[in-house]
Amino acid sequence: MIIAEAIEKLLLYLATERGLSTNYQLSTRASLERFTSWINDSKGINEPSAITPQHLHDFLMAEKKRGLATTSLKLEVVALRIFFRFLCARNFLSIDPAEKLPLPRLPHLLPQPLSKQQIEQLLATPQEKTSLGLRDKAILELLYACGLRISELCQARLEQLNLEEGMIRVTGKGNKTRLVPIGRAASQALEHYLTTARPQLISPKSGAAIFLSVRGHPLTPARIWQLVNSYAKQAGLPAMVHPHQLRHSFATHLLSGGADLRIIQELLGHASIATTQIYTQVDCEQLKAIHQQFHPRG
Image 1: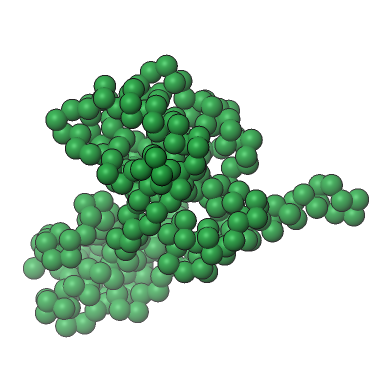
Image 2: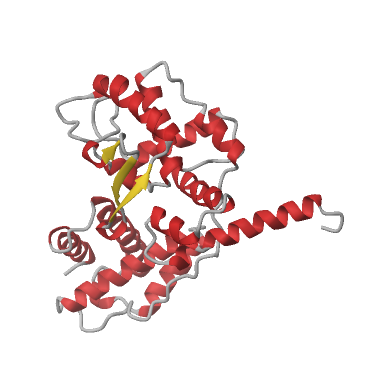
């Protein structure tokens, strides 16, 4: 069996037996096809049984030399591990060459929240005279007001929203649901969008998705990325802004306002308080910066 055939068997398994997302399947395919191309060209190997741990090490070194980021390199390692573990489990291989392949250590990066002033600039950018402007205003307000993940926003449905109570029920990682308060400004933006703009965007394929494209389809994560970044540029913000930064800003601003860390954990949908504690480090960094700027001996 050649490598390309083995990849197809893995992807069929991921889709039918594991039920993993299309995006995950595409990412795994891309990683494995890069490896296939490299080992064919550099080593002349076309069968999984001929691959050794040294080949995998050489491939990852080549990827690193061509400038692949550590996060992307980690995805390559994960794809290779899954691939060879699958082949061994199905008795296509007797030895797993990726069994001891180490994961690259990711740099410890603190989340970069926007300041409250920058948030205000961003939220004021959409033009509320058009249907799309009203939609985008509601998107930005909801991302910041609730600290939603981009996937949670895209999957949000009308039946999950209760504007009278000012709450939204979202489904996060691990298929866990949680209730999140929306807040006055976001509620007003949503009500305006739902009553004025969304009816103009509806199509037979819309379903109950809250946020729709110009063709009436549910918005994709990629489109949300584009919208947030585009409005950040229009607002004159200094660097590329991504949707997750609004989630970081939500948590950081709650913490700086005195919110309890356990409450923030619940609102963000973190399984562990250790994940939420990173925001205490962000707040400490801001305190240090203020101290250095204003204290005579800072």
